[in-house]
Image (tube, rainbow, N blue to C red; front, side):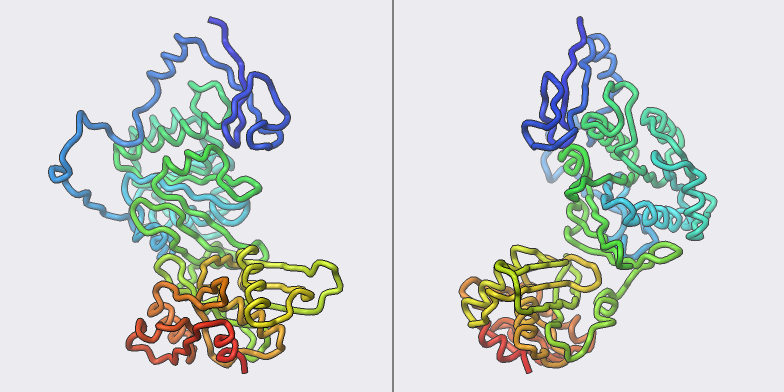
Length: 458
């Protein structure tokens, strides 16, 4: 049978019989990759090599009462912030995907975690497909990561990797990165749609069969999403994003999917000359250099997963010389900030239509929780009126289009975090006092934005 050639978009999977410079479905340029369909005999032989599905298969359905509960003995990774985002540690047999921008510190984080786990007596394999073992060794020496049970291997052939893993069965495997791995029985090149999906499936099948935890490093596209097929995120048990600004030392490790714990948990690290250092009290770090009695500065009481967090919101409002005033937002949702500016102008009478507005979440972090609304609103109003907020005040609450102040979840945790960081006042929606018990912080309640600004500004 004659082989057939087709072209597949690496971003969306669109198939064409001829090469296209631009994908007809997603509009991406230079993403069409050639794929040759193999003959039936070769395809059948290739299918025999493929491993079973992700989870071990059962003969038939069972009643739920007859199935034993899974006893989860989590592996301590030696980093409290990493354990937090994983839900308390790494689950044996789980498949974890870590993604982030190039140079953000993904390999550094996993190498430090591998060193900590190896120092605890576990055999850890760090498989690199992008660097030589000498390059990884150089980074490990710089960070002081040289335990005897940490093994380095430069390899991209998945069949060779699986064969060694089945024979040796280490305690933890790190693959850096999944886009460099390839299965020899597949015709497509490494990093292609088919290769990424198949390599992930085979690693997942082995992980579930022998209860081996596997951590994968994933590349991201220029838009910030994980490179490769979207199904990749569905195939793994946990998806972590490592994010931060290059010009700031802080890095945020964020959980967006976790089958063994809660999502949207965050861990905070600080990048230094010798690697990453855990920031166990991020609120204190983010507020360390906050100016006091400065117009346009407000402290927001946020929640990231189950973790309360205080962050500084800064705003600058000034007369615009442009026909269309500037709106520059860093660290917050751009559309949300524009909505708050419109509500302020309509419901409180602030004339912001001819003003440039700049909003920034300090520290290089990104927060998009609705409870940030009030902090953004009072920071903008403070800058516009050139009046500082009352001292030692934190703010939480959501803004509605009618100018009302709406309640948010977990008010007690937010109040406790604010009190712990030395705040004496908490500006919050009405009804918060009834939900916050045994707190020494003064709670100021507001039902509308007009009431809020009267309470917030000196």
